[in-house]
Image (cartoon, rainbow, N blue to C red; front, side, top):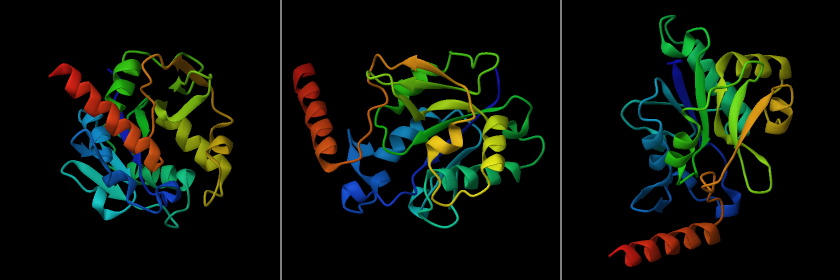
Length: 206
């Protein structure tokens, strides 16, 4: 199998959550970021970008430069960390791939399940989910690391850069998200709605 790493982005200001520590918000009995970590537990390395509170055994935490510099700066920080790994690291082998996931995906396990057996086609740089409206969910996919390195190098300026701008040169193979796996919880109303759905499901199953 192609070597796979994982990049978890959790360095935003979470302004739609009133500045709360989004990664630490609890749903379904665990913190949001821990749902993501569980989904990529078999990956090497797992690099999280954001505050020190993201630290867990087996997870390397780095910080984007500058802090809160946006998702492109966060990706650049993760890629820089991978480039500094020993040459025999899986992340540095030819053809290596990496999951790129936001920290607020409570169904990250479904994302991995939906895409893990989908190869990145020849001529493409990634496989990502597409929501019901056909929009590519860039932070719910798997990318060729070489393609990400090239994209960051070509862009140059990463502080405040838009993810759309970074990924524009890449060819993304989309897979319909039929299980609503890419649901993200970036507002308190979304968090509460998800919690209520989980409670309802538990009541129905008991």
